[in-house]
Image (cartoon, rainbow, N blue to C red; front, side, top):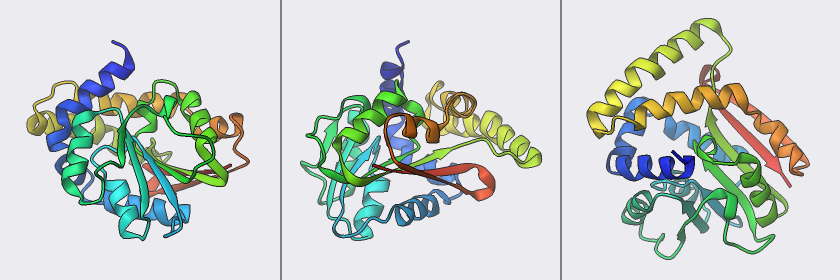
Length: 226
């Protein structure tokens, strides 16, 4: 199946349970991850933010609470965007159904781009980052929050057991989608083995790239500056 179609089907299917499962399966620590990523990115009331793969809007909503007023959300899943709209009183007219590889905005207009747990779902990461580079202002920043496999042997084995056994079981039980929570651990494993975000950012022209590790190395924050 074409990856774009697969991702859209999965997230349309689980949208009604997505927030609940996110918080339960991460034991609520996903809230900390988003706050930490946004603070490291340096967003402020002056920021013009594009939140890509925004899903139900948690990253954008957190940014809004931190003072960012000019926010656009972008996602491939119509159902996820619909839930985003229901959760806020400011997102109407500020979300767009699109993919990262073809952002429908003019050059050099955003000061910040954020992506939380979405880059591994891009069908062409390099093209997505090229698109980011085009729409960012000079000195603008992309902040990527993404899972990774921990380097510590014990934590890595526990993490893999949880991701491959516990998470798919709970996900299927709650969401009733047989594929969605099997796709997640498979996509993280494939992403970790094949993708180096720092290298790709530098390849497409970003001048400065910093990487941070959170929670025993299970999550990474990568910030690239144009």
